Amino acid sequence: GESVGLHLPTLSVQEGDNSIINCAYSNSASDYFIWYKQESGKGPQFIIDIRSNMDKRQGQRVTVLLNKTVKHLSLQIAATQPGDSAVYFCAERRGFQKLVFGTGTRLLVSP
Amino acid sequence: DAGVIQSPRHEVTEMGQEVTLRCKPISGHNSLFWYRQTMMRGLELLIYFNNNVPIDDSGMPEDRFSAKMPNASFSTLKIQPSEPRDSAVYFCASSFNAGNTEAFFGQGTRLTVV
Image 1 (cartoon, helix red, strand yellow):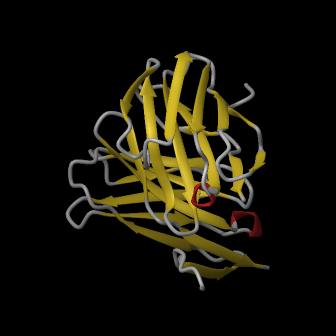
Image 2 (cartoon, chains in turn orange, cyan; image 1 turned 135 degrees about the horizontal axis):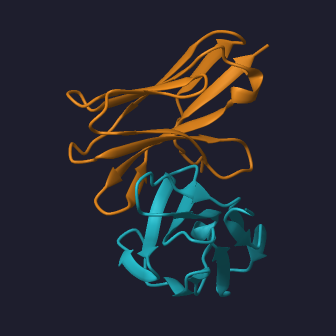
């Protein structure tokens, strides 16, 4: 029979647009959050992190926003490029070193 | 730095056979994680070690799975006997549990059990 897999939400943008990828986390005790990028055939790659005592952190072309009230995390990518096409995961740290990943969002960037 | 090194990159085995996946963490890292990635379940944490000691193995699916870390530079994940539903990509990751603690991932081992 047909297998049912995870349906990854997909965000399609044009090159040069700004992208916003969202993530809801479940554990209010999580104190550290990371965004990872995974390209086809590769392992997840660290993009940016944020601690629970912050609500915003900026990197090069990327910004992470944390809203602890609603347990929501977002990743903003400025001037999105075709090389940004990948699956993006948020991860939360629960307890000692335990990183739990979300289901991921596929970003498709067309030229 | 060579990063986290996993071997083999691909493994095809018959049902019932023993499979051993290997991982060399980044030198100086003292936490090591094994994850499994499938279309059905996404990225799941199987087990993690701190200073070579297993801290949480609650994600290990069943007794057929076992993991060891005999020293700071080597870990194995063993499946015995393997089953077709074990087919997945298995990732190893390592981190240094002080200050910034992002985990660095290896390239993964794609396991196919036929």
